Each structure stands twice: as structure tokens, then as C-alpha cells.
Image (cartoon, rainbow, N blue to C red; front, side, top):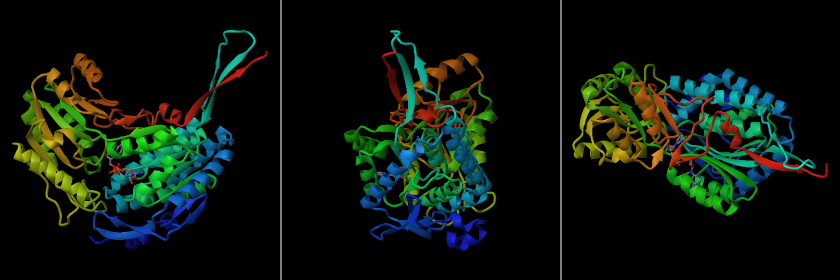
Length: 491
Ligand code: NAD
């Protein structure tokens, strides 16, 4: 396959959605330095276009545009902000095919999964359009009769949004929709691997009537833009999704200006299968949670812990499913696993497998991969132990390592033996165990008898080194609101 975006432009129904410029204050622009970076299709390694590599000076202009827009956007009645977000949602749905095609071309995931991401991403816009109407403060009973005390909800202000490449659409909407609903304006720095999905969203936001300067996007390499966004006293909030390493660096950079922070960081999700589990359901759940997006998902199960009595049967069924997985370009019919985002990702996966095998693991199943250096073979490893690299680091690829355990206590102890706490899954039909284990798992999100725990209505986020704050749900909008105590005296 040697398809580049330029070759596919004819298949885009609305060609205007493919932009190769940043946007500041409603003006589509290049970098003031003239610098650009090239974006490649991970399935082919071929360039699909360029985007500007925005500088510190460009970043200052974007912050200023967001600051100017904030003064009027915060005054727009909530119902009107909600209506604009609803229009944005409708446009996303109407252009879902084009948005999915752009996403697959720059990120690699199978087209059907890309469409799923667009629906999922749009659902946050819809949810927060609804929440915009329900930003309510409170009246606090006063201890004296000569005053009223009010709790007012106000937008935090200009918010910096930094997002990863694995969900180029949804990671943006999950942050931008609550920010805009709350009355904040944003400066977005999308991943330098996947900027086109963000730019297409900005085109649709413009068409939805979201005013110039409310959404600004800076494409390019991260360090210079990130340094400026975090240092600026005008930026009052940073919402970041990405690795724990970069998240903690940005947290330190935000410290001098004491910004509000939301950090959605790395995970090391355990997936526990107890002897009494429904075997087929557990295999389905493991496939969903481990292999979605080629295993490049922060809530992907990273360690699959299986109780002795069901271990062999589970390994056999999972292996049969994994061995049959089709790997290839996300645009090919029937492909379950697309390319990894880059060569470094493939090398990390190969390193984890080699380390596990050297320490005694066996490869129980391995699917065939096409020619091309960016494809990683889906695999099942049995006989994994906690001293292996894949037990303590995110593999972020389509490799399912199986660990054997004997008792519930042992399983919970292994599950919690990690500095991360994003997602955890377990399969059992014993209700007493369900409560015990559900409460014992140290994790921001827990799935019992399900491998899917992410939806707009539910709070998403981690504990420990997996981050701070929540996205989605009622909590999601609170991340962009301040509470002001307003005392009215002399009554
Ligand atoms: P990353 O941390 O390398 O990059 C994330 C973003 O930060 C990108 O936009 C990148 O350009 C930017 N960045 C990198 N260095 C920067 C700097 N010095 N200053 C400012 N910005 C900088 O992560 P990634 O490889 O893009 O994404 C994968 C990671 O994201 C995984 O660890 C995964 O678990 C995590 N993730 C977490 C969630 C969640 O909700 N918790 C969701 C998706 C991904």
C-alpha cells in the first residue's frame, strides 16, 4: 500500500477539512519563522503533507488571541454557548466519514475504529453542550442576618490543551468541549504526529459559529510551544494527556505560575480473570481492552492475570483469536490491527517480547504481519512473571502477556504493585468477590465483566502517577470552573 493523503483527497467529500496551517484568532497561518514539519502515514511511511512548526512568538500571539476572545466568550449566555457546541456536534456527525479518513491516514487505526472514535469524540461535545446549561452556583446559609453568601461558578480562563497521537479526535473534544461550555478559550497543541484531525475539528467549529480566537491551534514540535504555554501567566489552566514523563515535566513548568492542572497520564492496567469467570466473556473483554487501537490505548490492559484453574483454557481461546488477527493498513477491509505510530513504538514492543522470552515466557500465538517496518505482530505470551519489563512498563502494542495466580489476595497484590492507577478490569461471577476486588483495586476506573469503561457520562481519569482530575461526566466541566464566594453585606 502506498497511499498518501494527497492521493486520497478525491475520496474526501469535503476537501476543505484538510488544512495544512495553524489557526490563531480565526486566521489560518504559517509559522512566523517559515518552519514546517512533515506528517507521515504510518501505514506507508510516506509523507502526507506538512504543517507549520510554530515558534514561541507564534505561541504568544495565540495566547493573546485566546485572551481577547475570553473577555467576550465568557459573557455569552450559557444557552448560546450550548447551541454552538450542539452545532459543532451535528457537523462532526455529518462529516464523520471524512474525519475518520483523515484520522486513519495520520494515525493508522482501522477505519471502522476511526469512525468509532469520531462518534465517541462527538459524544463529549453533545454531553458538554448539555452541561453548559447546568452550570449552577449556590446560596450558602449565612451565619448572620445582615448578609447573603453566594457561590458563583466562573470560567478558569485561557486554557492550554496538549494532546497525544493515539486518539487525535477524542482527546481534543474531551477537553475542548467542557472548556468552551464553561466559558474558557483554548490554545491547543495537538500531537506532532497527528495534527490534521485537530485542524479539521477547528474548521467545523468555525462553521458552527464558534467565534474567532475561542479555539486556537498551534502545530509543530512540542518543546518550544510547551515552554511558552506553561510559562505564560495569561494561561490559567493546562489540560494534558500523554505520558507520565512529559506530564510531570509540564507540571513542574506550570508551578511558577500556579496553574490549574488536569493530567491524564500513562497506565499499567491489570486484567484479572478468576476461575469462576464466564470464559468467553473474559476472552471478548481481553480482546476489546488489549487490542483496541493496536494496543495503543492508555486504558489498555497491560497485564493479564489468570487464575490457575482457568489459565490453560483462557490462553487457548485467546491465542486462537489473536493468531487469526489481520494486520495491515487501516484502510484495508477486515484489518483488526493497523500500523504502530512509529518505528520507536515497534522497537519497544519487540524489546518487551524479547525480554519476556529471555526470562522464560513462551509465545503462545503470533499473527502474521505484512511487509513494513511499522507493523507489530499481535501475540499472546504465556508464563509471564513480574520481573519482566512488560510487567512494569506500558507496552503500548498488541501483545497480551498472561500471568498465572493462585489466590485473590495474590492477584490484587500484583494488580496494585505499580505506580500507576488508571484502569483495571476483572472477570468473576461471585458477587462477594466482585465487591471486594472492585474496592481493593487501586485505580481511577474499574470494569467488572467488561473491557470497556470509557464513555462521556462516566468520569475518566487516574490516581497515583496516572494523573489528576477527571474528564467526561459532571466532573469534567468542574475542571474548567472556579468557585467564587460572593458576600453581599449591609442587608
Ligand atoms: P507524550 O507524552 O510523548 O506526548 C503527549 C503530547 O505532549 C504530545 O502532543 C507531545 O507533542 C507533547 N509533548 C511532548 N513533550 C513535550 C514538552 N516538552 N512540552 C510540551 N508538550 C510536549 O505521549 P504520546 O506518546 O503522544 O502518548 C502516549 C502516552 O499518552 C501514553 O503514555 C498513554 O498512556 C498516554 N495516554 C493517556 C491517556 C489518559 O487519558 N490517561 C489517554 C491517551 C494516552
